[in-house]
Image 1 (tube, rainbow, N blue to C red):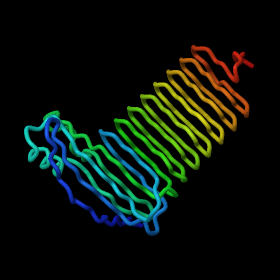
Image 2 (cartoon, one colour; image 1 turned 45 degrees about the vertical axis):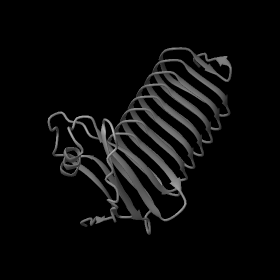
Image 3 (cartoon, rainbow, N blue to C red; image 1 turned 180 degrees about the vertical axis):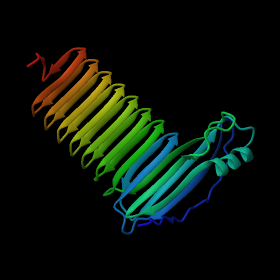
Length: 254
């Protein structure tokens, strides 16, 4: 069956120039969430902040910026011509796109970053495909799934399971009321107050965890592992290098 995407009400209410460099302007999007249960985000370079709120509307506040354009008019024109920026609905899911168009590989090596602040109903499931830049998600009762290229990731107050596939950059998560699954290339991982179990496959970087209610399983390439106040079982699949300490005691291979 052919899917039909309905374009949201787009509030292009402010195209505000900011003094100084880089050039910046703002664009906003909004969408009523009637009969929607989650949101999928496909975003490119720039920061992303997602927060769960009360209400029945998704609100997207974007600051577009670049140091590679001579004036504001050129930047606005390039953004309108070369970038995807839309909020639609498709089969019960909201779809946010904020990135360079697929068929536009490069145009004079000029970069445009879209910095996003996104408000969604806290009951939503959240799926994010992010290329680069800092990423924060907080106050979400649904599941959170993240596929990230690079940049720091911060998750707080998530009421369900969390899944992260990350290339590089530090990961910090706290107050998760579900299981946590992390596949990480490189970067430090910190986690605290996890009510479910934890499964980590890590290339490199230190792993620290505190207050884990379930089991903790690790497949680690390099870097130390420190887990405190673990209530479940600990399982080490592989440890290339680095010390391992569980509940204050040095871990000996079983």
